Length: 447
Image (cartoon, rainbow, N blue to C red):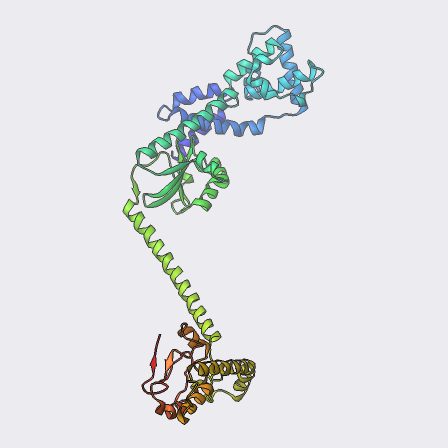
């Protein structure tokens, strides 16, 4: 609705003096191009603003309305006394009826005070009022008051639910996937729009994630109030959305540059939905990206673990019974070599004694009781004890079925003792790897 038409309607409402029921009839006659719901919504908003300014609940006002009512009853006036008082003083009939009911329970019922009686309870069911004349007067007020009557409040609530159902039906007809307000509340959402879309849609190039239904006219002050209490909360939680004022709205409240929500007076049918295959591709792409990130993290941890294990499993030259060190240790400082020799000194002694005992047992099992060893065999046996490679724990792991780690290697020739003696000068282990040299030509390794 344009601003000029709205101002004309508002001016008629403000100039009218009397009941809102009569003012509504006047608006329908002058503006037949507008719907009944639109005119009533504007009338209701303007009438509520007026009541906030003119309706006074002071003790003086309460006594005045009560005295006027009692005088009319005693003089035998026709029914409708409270309605005529409301029209004379330009106050809603139900508001005047509440004041008179409160004063009645203060004076007529001694055991109850006005503050302890629920006036709305008697206003909703006038049959419970002890005074029959007063009960009938209050009942007439509920009929002639179309703003503050309990019947009107019930009709407003029902009207809002009807338009929510209309929104759900139209959304289903368009094939939208959404969750209603009741479902969101069950799942613990503190702010619940009427319709939360599972798959966003585009309306005139604007992405919509939620829809809010309002069965009223979108006036400026009302829009600001709802925006502060609801719309901004929805935008903060779910993103941009759509607000529907079913009874129209002022063009003034629309901001073209606003990226938080758009305003319409119906649910548009020119929706652009994301195809299902596009959604599936987006989901798979995000899933693959997540797997790649996970693989990168796994590789990083694997590399760190291998590097850490490599540092812990470093075997020095002293552990392998060599006089020299690796190429890297040769260039290292003398202090580092001294510290490593101190750390392995105790372990070296223990391995040495173990190697000697194992070599003795091996020699005793393989020697012949009636033959004496030759000089070459003796030299080979001495070198085996010296190097003690066969008794190294790594050889024991490689040849688990060998007896004391020595029976798996057999020397094929006794003339190769010289090569075994020169083993120490030819072999230098490298950092991070173990390369086993050929001890003697013709040597065979059985696994």
